[in-house]
Image (cartoon, rainbow over all chains, first blue to last red; front, top):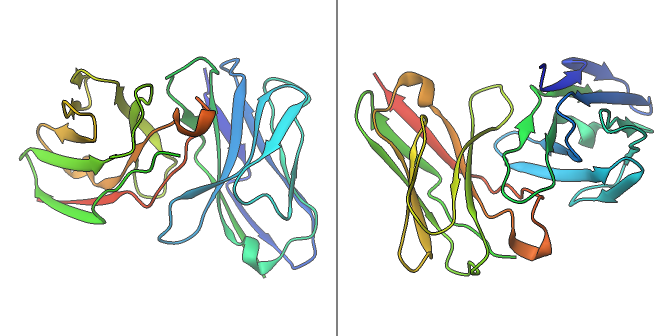
Length: 113
Length: 112
Protein backbone atom coordinates (compact mmCIF):
# COMPACT_ATOMS: atom_id res chain seq x y z
CA UNK A 1 0.00 0.00 0.00
CA UNK A 2 1.99 3.00 -1.28
CA UNK A 3 -0.52 5.71 -0.31
CA UNK A 4 -0.27 8.89 -2.41
CA UNK A 5 2.65 9.01 -4.81
CA UNK A 6 3.75 12.20 -6.53
CA UNK A 7 6.26 12.47 -9.34
CA UNK A 8 8.61 14.14 -9.92
CA UNK A 9 9.93 15.31 -6.56
CA UNK A 10 11.81 18.24 -8.10
CA UNK A 11 11.43 20.05 -11.41
CA UNK A 12 12.89 23.16 -13.01
CA UNK A 13 11.01 24.66 -15.95
CA UNK A 14 11.63 27.58 -18.22
CA UNK A 15 8.92 30.18 -18.59
CA UNK A 16 6.42 29.07 -21.20
CA UNK A 17 7.19 25.36 -20.95
CA UNK A 18 4.47 22.87 -20.18
CA UNK A 19 4.55 19.88 -17.90
CA UNK A 20 2.38 17.45 -15.99
CA UNK A 21 2.70 16.70 -12.30
CA UNK A 22 1.64 13.15 -11.60
CA UNK A 23 -0.38 11.95 -8.61
CA UNK A 24 -1.47 8.38 -7.98
CA UNK A 25 -3.18 6.72 -5.03
CA UNK A 26 -3.84 3.04 -4.38
CA UNK A 27 -6.48 3.39 -1.66
CA UNK A 28 -9.51 3.60 -3.98
CA UNK A 29 -10.33 7.08 -2.69
CA UNK A 30 -13.01 8.99 -4.55
CA UNK A 31 -11.74 12.45 -3.62
CA UNK A 32 -8.43 13.78 -4.88
CA UNK A 33 -7.07 17.30 -4.83
CA UNK A 34 -4.09 19.49 -5.66
CA UNK A 35 -2.68 22.21 -3.43
CA UNK A 36 0.16 24.65 -3.80
CA UNK A 37 2.19 26.00 -0.91
CA UNK A 38 4.25 29.14 -1.20
CA UNK A 39 6.96 30.00 1.37
CA UNK A 40 5.54 30.82 4.79
CA UNK A 41 1.98 30.19 3.60
CA UNK A 42 -0.65 27.57 4.17
CA UNK A 43 -1.82 25.27 1.42
CA UNK A 44 -4.17 26.66 -1.22
CA UNK A 45 -6.54 24.43 -3.16
CA UNK A 46 -6.02 24.44 -6.94
CA UNK A 47 -8.41 21.79 -8.30
CA UNK A 48 -10.22 18.81 -6.90
CA UNK A 49 -12.16 15.77 -8.06
CA UNK A 50 -14.87 13.69 -6.41
CA UNK A 51 -14.56 10.78 -8.83
CA UNK A 52 -13.51 9.72 -12.29
CA UNK A 53 -14.75 12.18 -14.89
CA UNK A 54 -15.60 14.87 -12.32
CA UNK A 55 -13.35 17.84 -11.56
CA UNK A 56 -13.88 21.29 -10.14
CA UNK A 57 -11.91 24.43 -9.41
CA UNK A 58 -10.53 25.35 -6.06
CA UNK A 59 -9.25 28.65 -4.75
CA UNK A 60 -6.41 29.25 -7.24
CA UNK A 61 -7.16 27.36 -10.51
CA UNK A 62 -5.79 29.79 -13.09
CA UNK A 63 -2.90 28.41 -15.13
CA UNK A 64 -3.64 24.78 -14.24
CA UNK A 65 -5.69 22.03 -15.85
CA UNK A 66 -6.72 18.67 -14.44
CA UNK A 67 -8.51 15.55 -15.59
CA UNK A 68 -9.58 12.38 -13.81
CA UNK A 69 -9.92 9.42 -16.16
CA UNK A 70 -9.35 6.80 -13.46
CA UNK A 71 -9.93 6.59 -9.72
CA UNK A 72 -6.21 6.17 -9.13
CA UNK A 73 -4.70 9.07 -11.07
CA UNK A 74 -5.16 12.84 -10.93
CA UNK A 75 -2.54 14.67 -13.02
CA UNK A 76 -2.02 18.43 -12.82
CA UNK A 77 -1.03 20.18 -16.04
CA UNK A 78 0.76 23.48 -16.39
CA UNK A 79 0.15 24.59 -19.96
CA UNK A 80 2.55 27.56 -20.03
CA UNK A 81 4.62 27.83 -16.87
CA UNK A 82 5.15 31.23 -15.27
CA UNK A 83 7.54 32.26 -12.47
CA UNK A 84 4.49 32.87 -10.26
CA UNK A 85 3.87 29.13 -10.36
CA UNK A 86 7.10 28.44 -8.54
CA UNK A 87 5.87 26.58 -5.48
CA UNK A 88 5.60 23.23 -3.73
CA UNK A 89 2.67 21.20 -4.97
CA UNK A 90 0.87 18.60 -2.86
CA UNK A 91 -1.64 16.03 -3.94
CA UNK A 92 -4.13 14.59 -1.46
CA UNK A 93 -6.78 11.90 -1.45
CA UNK A 94 -9.50 10.77 0.93
CA UNK A 95 -12.74 8.79 0.87
CA UNK A 96 -15.84 10.89 0.25
CA UNK A 97 -17.67 9.70 3.32
CA UNK A 98 -17.73 12.15 6.15
CA UNK A 99 -14.86 12.74 8.50
CA UNK A 100 -12.25 10.51 7.09
CA UNK A 101 -8.60 11.38 7.11
CA UNK A 102 -6.87 12.77 4.06
CA UNK A 103 -3.56 11.41 2.85
CA UNK A 104 -0.98 13.66 1.27
CA UNK A 105 1.90 13.00 -1.06
CA UNK A 106 5.42 14.15 -0.32
CA UNK A 107 5.19 17.08 -2.69
CA UNK A 108 6.72 18.30 -5.93
CA UNK A 109 9.04 21.29 -5.67
CA UNK A 110 8.66 23.26 -8.91
CA UNK A 111 10.86 26.18 -9.94
CA UNK A 112 10.02 28.24 -13.02
CA UNK A 113 12.87 30.39 -14.28
CA UNK B 1 -17.56 29.13 5.82
CA UNK B 2 -16.67 28.76 9.45
CA UNK B 3 -13.14 30.01 10.05
CA UNK B 4 -10.50 29.06 12.57
CA UNK B 5 -8.01 31.24 14.41
CA UNK B 6 -4.71 29.91 15.72
CA UNK B 7 -1.63 31.57 17.21
CA UNK B 8 1.14 32.02 14.66
CA UNK B 9 3.72 30.24 16.78
CA UNK B 10 4.29 28.46 20.08
CA UNK B 11 7.30 27.10 21.84
CA UNK B 12 7.71 24.11 24.11
CA UNK B 13 10.42 22.12 25.83
CA UNK B 14 11.04 18.49 25.08
CA UNK B 15 9.05 16.00 27.18
CA UNK B 16 6.66 18.69 28.41
CA UNK B 17 2.97 18.84 27.44
CA UNK B 18 1.90 21.21 24.72
CA UNK B 19 -1.55 22.77 24.38
CA UNK B 20 -2.28 24.19 20.94
CA UNK B 21 -5.44 26.34 20.89
CA UNK B 22 -7.89 26.94 18.07
CA UNK B 23 -10.85 29.32 18.05
CA UNK B 24 -13.81 28.58 15.79
CA UNK B 25 -16.55 30.84 17.13
CA UNK B 26 -18.77 30.50 14.02
CA UNK B 27 -18.76 26.70 14.05
CA UNK B 28 -22.07 25.06 13.19
CA UNK B 29 -23.59 22.07 14.89
CA UNK B 30 -22.48 19.62 12.20
CA UNK B 31 -18.90 20.86 11.82
CA UNK B 32 -16.26 18.39 12.89
CA UNK B 33 -12.91 19.75 14.05
CA UNK B 34 -9.89 18.25 12.34
CA UNK B 35 -6.19 18.71 13.08
CA UNK B 36 -3.37 18.12 10.66
CA UNK B 37 0.32 18.79 11.03
CA UNK B 38 3.10 19.38 8.54
CA UNK B 39 6.61 18.36 9.41
CA UNK B 40 9.45 20.25 7.67
CA UNK B 41 9.69 19.45 3.96
CA UNK B 42 6.80 16.97 4.11
CA UNK B 43 3.16 16.87 3.17
CA UNK B 44 0.53 17.39 5.87
CA UNK B 45 -0.52 14.40 7.94
CA UNK B 46 -3.73 13.75 9.85
CA UNK B 47 -3.56 14.03 13.61
CA UNK B 48 -7.04 13.76 15.09
CA UNK B 49 -10.66 14.88 14.73
CA UNK B 50 -13.75 15.23 16.90
CA UNK B 51 -17.27 16.67 17.13
CA UNK B 52 -18.29 17.23 20.74
CA UNK B 53 -16.50 14.85 23.03
CA UNK B 54 -12.84 14.85 23.86
CA UNK B 55 -10.89 12.41 21.70
CA UNK B 56 -7.66 10.52 22.21
CA UNK B 57 -5.42 8.61 19.87
CA UNK B 58 -1.82 7.50 19.83
CA UNK B 59 -0.60 10.86 18.58
CA UNK B 60 -2.57 13.38 20.62
CA UNK B 61 -5.72 14.34 22.48
CA UNK B 62 -8.36 16.80 21.37
CA UNK B 63 -10.23 18.77 24.00
CA UNK B 64 -13.38 20.49 22.72
CA UNK B 65 -15.03 23.29 24.69
CA UNK B 66 -18.58 22.70 25.82
CA UNK B 67 -19.87 25.47 23.54
CA UNK B 68 -17.64 24.11 20.73
CA UNK B 69 -16.31 27.56 19.94
CA UNK B 70 -12.79 26.52 20.71
CA UNK B 71 -10.66 23.40 20.92
CA UNK B 72 -7.19 22.45 22.09
CA UNK B 73 -4.83 19.90 20.64
CA UNK B 74 -2.78 18.34 23.39
CA UNK B 75 0.57 16.67 22.85
CA UNK B 76 1.21 14.95 26.15
CA UNK B 77 5.00 14.80 25.93
CA UNK B 78 6.51 16.84 23.14
CA UNK B 79 9.46 15.40 21.29
CA UNK B 80 11.76 17.03 18.79
CA UNK B 81 9.87 15.13 16.09
CA UNK B 82 6.72 17.05 17.01
CA UNK B 83 8.19 20.31 15.70
CA UNK B 84 5.81 21.16 12.87
CA UNK B 85 3.06 23.49 11.69
CA UNK B 86 -0.28 22.43 13.18
CA UNK B 87 -3.48 23.20 11.33
CA UNK B 88 -6.98 23.31 12.83
CA UNK B 89 -9.58 22.76 10.08
CA UNK B 90 -13.36 22.50 9.80
CA UNK B 91 -13.82 20.40 6.65
CA UNK B 92 -17.58 20.21 6.88
CA UNK B 93 -18.16 23.94 6.65
CA UNK B 94 -19.48 25.62 3.53
CA UNK B 95 -21.61 22.71 2.35
CA UNK B 96 -18.69 20.43 1.62
CA UNK B 97 -17.66 17.55 3.81
CA UNK B 98 -14.44 16.78 2.05
CA UNK B 99 -12.56 19.93 1.09
CA UNK B 100 -9.79 20.93 3.49
CA UNK B 101 -9.10 24.66 3.71
CA UNK B 102 -5.76 25.42 5.33
CA UNK B 103 -4.92 28.61 7.19
CA UNK B 104 -1.39 29.47 8.25
CA UNK B 105 -1.53 27.21 11.29
CA UNK B 106 0.66 27.31 14.40
CA UNK B 107 4.38 26.75 14.09
CA UNK B 108 5.45 24.65 17.07
CA UNK B 109 9.08 24.82 18.09
CA UNK B 110 10.32 22.17 20.52
CA UNK B 111 13.45 22.98 22.48
CA UNK B 112 15.77 20.17 23.62
